[in-house]
Amino acid sequence: MKFSDGSGCILSETGDEWGMTFSSREQAGRELGKRLLELGVKPDVVLGLPRGGVQVAAEAARILQCPLDVLVVRKIGHPRQREFAVGALAEPDVVLLDRDASEKARVEDADLQAVIAEETERLQNYQTKFHPTGAMLLEGRTVLIIDDGLATGATTEAAVLSARQQKAQRVIVASPVASSHAAARLRAVADEVITLVTDPEFGAVGQYYGFFPQTTDEEVLALLQHHA
Image (tube, rainbow, N blue to C red; front, side, top):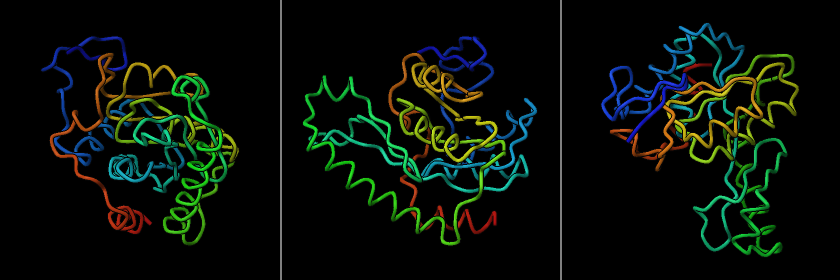
């Protein structure tokens, strides 16, 4: 398997500059934070995408000495195969649909709207849980959006659109690992996209981590409280 570090350098599976996997989200966040510091990235706020992205974002925010918050996103899954994304939602009211994917998968509009309604309710519940006193204001600020991995880029694109909608001055996306497709997709909507590893043969995000358990809501809340 071959990788690119985002600068066009193709690396082997045991590349000299970046390894194939990160031991954990925390370690990936530290590596990402150090890289962002080297590049002179100076955001006003770091936004992690719940839930796993918040663990990465927390480490990067600590290194960059920036405030940490979350930007709530939800995947819109195929009605009969929910792991297959046909779009994404982002707070407060961004709906991003992949019409080509929906048409190819023959998704009925009524079924799709039912999924959107369900995921919208979940998104609103997470907003209440993760923003008990309200979300940070993004207007006029440089925003750094971080996830633990970019597979299709759909949810992160929705997050970028949300930051734009909230009048962020500059939107940067960063992640330890991304597919080539997702990186290209996000470069079309974000001001900058920074990854440690960009893999043209991307599989699943978890394969790039030695330890990749599901992040809990309680862990996200603890990280937010710690960085408050």
